[in-house]
Image (spheres, rainbow, N blue to C red):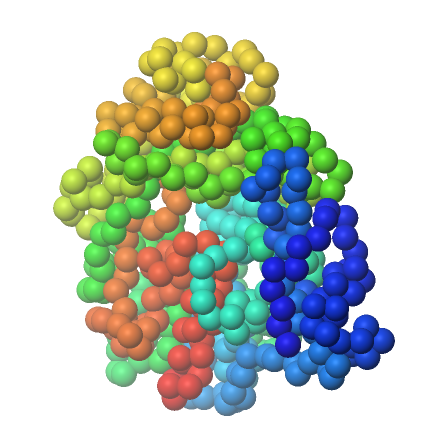
Length: 506
């Protein structure tokens, strides 16, 4: 049976949770043969009296093991092709490999080991590698982030499959039950590599430095060009949200596409102990994790919200093009850094950037190039204390919060980079958040920019059957095609597409 709302103090052991659950279920503890924690969360509504809340499954009989049913169909005339090896592509390939379809993965970037070397060179020396950066490559953009796995997905079976697959590949077992699970970028790299090895062991093939430059329908099949030519009748398009050149190729080939709203803004950085104080009522506690937050404000200039909050994390450079600065957030599994950070975003749409399908991309690029110039080149990022941002002055960066962004930052007036509406919305939002959560936006908190890649500016249209509206042998998938918004949702979308291909006879 399932039990919910089991409330215990911090530090309660698994055995204590089991004992309380057995009593609540009117079971003799000695007769309990099955016990599993389904969910563990914090109740921080009463500051200074924080408790843990559990949902569990407990019974006198062993629990039935539940697993996603993946039909074994074996090889077909054509091997399916997966374009991109981020979360959506990885799980599409993994599920199809488990079914015996021996998928071929074409990834424009490098394996995670080589990719990290390129990212390190950018962060430490300001040298960008076009083939190894934080935007694409094995693991996708999420490989250099916090590795957050929480989502609003209702399908428990698919979520459980993704989480258990991550655990099998080396992720911490706690992700199966924590209310806000995360892996951390340090552990995520190991998980990504292990998942690739599983795909290969099951008969799949993963080809790196394989940028897809053309997709053409010929003779009832698709011809996919990535230096070599690959012929298939089922193509999973899992390209990621930064594949701007691929979007242009798809448009030229007549794919049904549309521009979509997205969001832009800045990344705010605070002392983690200030966030702990605001959320828990204490600056530090050995039994409490680094506190996180989620804030939303509807202002007269537009909605403002936090995104990809990274407790104990770092602000990082996620640029993939010369002459443009893009920021993101990252945490290691321990989340033990001195600072907290989160993106503060404002929604933008055609009224902000124009009606052409690629106007959103141009808008992103213009902001990124302005940030690069304001930073002084070399991928230095423009940065400003919150107090100075609110007063519209450049100011200095001297204060209690030290910037974590690498290679370095430059003091600027960020309001001169962003549009007037976005700047106004951010100022109103930051002021409101500080009133609700003192310490969120103190005078020394830092803003670093620009954050432009929270989601794709373009959607590759598909129908209810998950097939492209214009190319029925193509399955647009994941965040880059406009159907996900994070690691978990992208991975689940990849699973769904793979099951559709397996069960649909292609």
